[in-house]
Length: 366
Image (tube, rainbow, N blue to C red):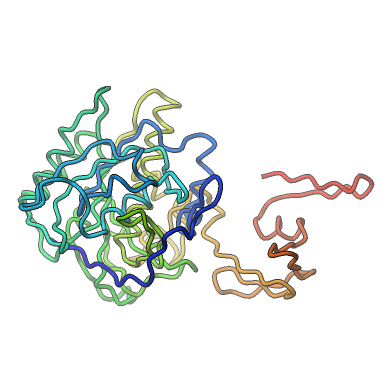
């Protein structure tokens, strides 16, 4: 088993620093903020089956609850590759960068070496460790993220995934990066192709299918996986692409669902219920209904979401997912801030508003 680590375009030291934290575009596309007033993932635990996690990263240090290494010659779960730390940040970064579920706890399960390779036996041990893990307060793993894959099935790995699902754990898997954007060709990667897994394909930040994302009849949903900003060892941040980056967006979303159900109903949902919710709330982007590229579509907590909107100061033309539209009044730029008519912005966001001329006041309902 292996990961295909994308080329690092640039390493950032403090690009994201902003009071209150910054949610990258992928986190915004899945509309995680829609859930944050209710929950940020507290009470949920995600096991990251990967290359380890840099538990000293300032945006992760408070959320890495435990870890283990099954890699020979790498005795602790510190990430010597970077892939696992990037995945972890998308799920639950909680600092200057914000992941999908910033208060979810993470387990670093190192099964892949610093070179990105691992044996089936190590992966099976890691999955079993995650299934058996208990926190000091009796916490259990709710979600497993597997941003890894290979072309061949493995019975022992499959059986361990079945046991995880039967024990109440949602297993989220990267669909694979051997695609060609052609729905007529099938590219299969395991463990994503197992029916018990939640298979996640990748879209770009304009919601188009990523040209590397595998297509087949068991893709469940798609999530942002192109130019994904996230954490990197040494307190840094990088931008990577791959279905490895898409899967943790879905894992973080699943963690928010587990957390919210625990708050609301006093119990966790089943993996089948979580999968059904994720599939139901996906925004249909390809052929109507299910298709082999997008699955059920781009997951978002906002059923009106999935929109990448671009406006430019001084221009009436704007774009939603690369389609052109026109404003009545062009935005203006003043001291580095772009201003646009509030009522027109509400229309773009499918939000109702009312202007009271006598009071020069706008009311917005969302």
